[in-house]
Image 1 (cartoon, rainbow, N blue to C red):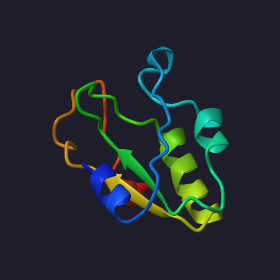
Image 2 (tube, helix red, strand yellow; image 1 turned 180 degrees about the vertical axis):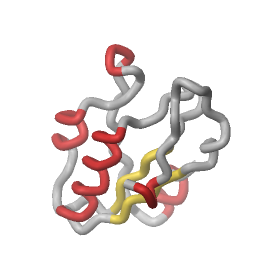
Image 3 (tube, rainbow, N blue to C red; image 1 turned 30 degrees about the vertical axis):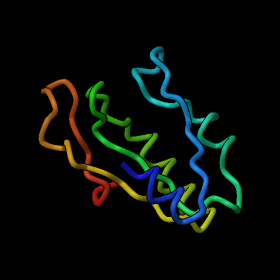
Length: 96
């Protein structure tokens, strides 16, 4: 959804792979490894579709901190926030 707009504007998408062994969340070191002053925005979908993965509180905090530290926008897509199960609680970004 975001990639065509980014490409149209001359940007480059850098993906960080979600890891099954981490509950379909990217590793913190993997996220940190792609950060640089050239990063203009971080896009996070929480909860994710189709896996239903909900980002951990520590990952949300990391994304907020990285966006602040690198002066990047944090685009936080919460479109599926009402589609979680009892064992996966969604934390809105505004409460982070």
